[in-house]
Each structure stands twice: as C-alpha cells, then as structure tokens.
Image (cartoon, rainbow, N blue to C red; front, side, top):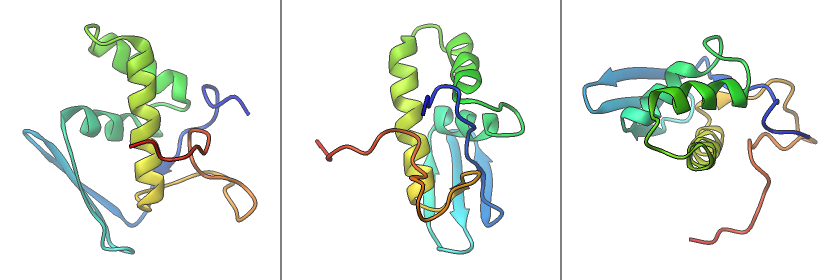
Length: 112
C-alpha cells in the first residue's frame, strides 16, 4: 500500500486536545494516556482530518510552513508521530481491523 496516498488516521472520539503556547496536551478518556506535544506536534494534530485527507496533503502543509526543514525529514517525523498517536489510541484508522496493520509506516525493529 502506498502510505503517501493513504487516508490519514482521524482523532479518536475519546481524545481531548488542549492547545498551549508551547504546543499542546492530548488526553485519551478511554486509555487515560496523557501525551504532551510540541508546537509541530500540535500543528500535525490540527492538520488531521478533516483539515487534510492524505499523508501527502498533511506533509505539504508542513513543508510550506517549515521551509527550513527538508521534506524527507518532515515525512519521517510525521510518520513517527502518527505511529505514536495510533499506538496510544489517540487516533483511529479508517477500516482498521484485526487483520490490518493500523500503523502509518511499515513495521520494523526498534533501533533506538
């Protein structure tokens, strides 16, 4: 599947976002996950559907706003951030079920 053209995950109905001057805070009322985000993370959250529909659209908006960062770096960072949101139940993927991998990027071994 081409992840660039894939639909973006949508904010979970259980997610609450509170914007702050230095970014924002996400909280899941289902899982009680608290997730602090910086200014760029808050901007990605704001660009989730319905603001943008695809990964490419979201990244294009960020590339236009943050021209000092390479498009490849923005795409990598957005994939990682969206994966973190999915793993923490803060977004939901359309059509995701037990047989589909809801992650935005391919599964790979952790290399931290």
